[in-house]
Every structure is written in C-alpha cells, then in structure tokens.
Length: 149
Image (cartoon, rainbow, N blue to C red; front, side, top):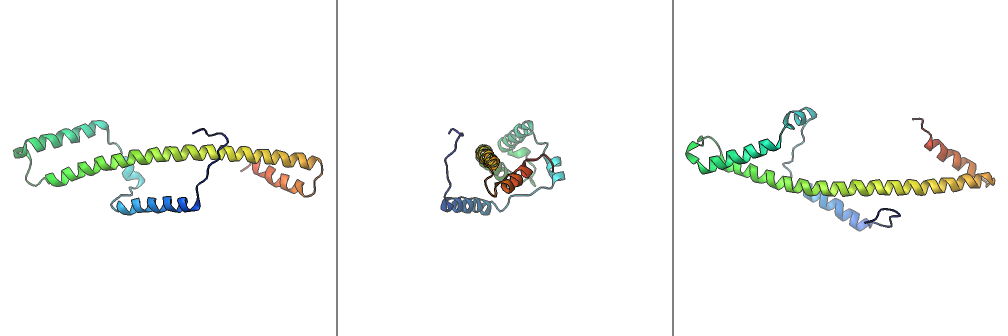
C-alpha cells in the first residue's frame, strides 16, 4: 500500500472489535509471564544453539527411555516444547502485526505533520495580511515548533 497521502479510516465499531479481540487473546493466555528487567537479562541469553540442544536432548530421551531418570517428567517436557513452538508462531505473527502498525503510525505521523505545516504556513501568510486573531494562533503554533524543551 502506498503511504503518501493516506486516505484510510478505522471505524469506531472496527476499533472496538480489534481491542476486544486483543483482550480475548490476552485472556486466552493467562499463563503469560512478566519478567523483571534483571530476569530478562539473566534468562535472555537463550540462543539458537540452545534450541538445537533442547530438540536433540528431547529426541534422545524419547528414543532412549531407559536413560531417562524416573523423576524427569517427559510429558511435562513435551508439553513445554509444544507450547514453546506454538508461542513462537504466535510471536512471529504478533511481530508482523507490530511492524505493520509501527510503519503505518510513522507514515500517518509524517502525513499529519506535513498537513499541519501546510496549515501553519497558511496562517503565517494570513498574519502578513493582518487577518484578525491569526497572530495569536501563529505564535501558539510557533512556540510548539521551537527546539526548547
């Protein structure tokens, strides 16, 4: 989709529907975890090599049941691996959605800023012709454009 001069809308009904469905997804996944920053750093060192390690270890354990300690929960391990695969698939889809949302938001911000600048320039021109009340509007907008924070 071209992103110059966007002419798109999201109806209020569709907006409500999207937010409801996002909340439904959140409700379906009540087990999701919220790690602290420190936990994320500690646990975040998971690499693709570890993925291969997990797959290989599980395959060996499945094929060599006599080598598996009796206290090791094979069913729980298998469920964890399956859930991880499912969540990775969901994560990829969410990341695709996030990228599309981010790109659309950037394009819309750019377009609305350009339109606002056109309007501001028009006000400045009207101020030159002493249009009543325009000076205050120009000054208000000008103050928002200054680099002072």
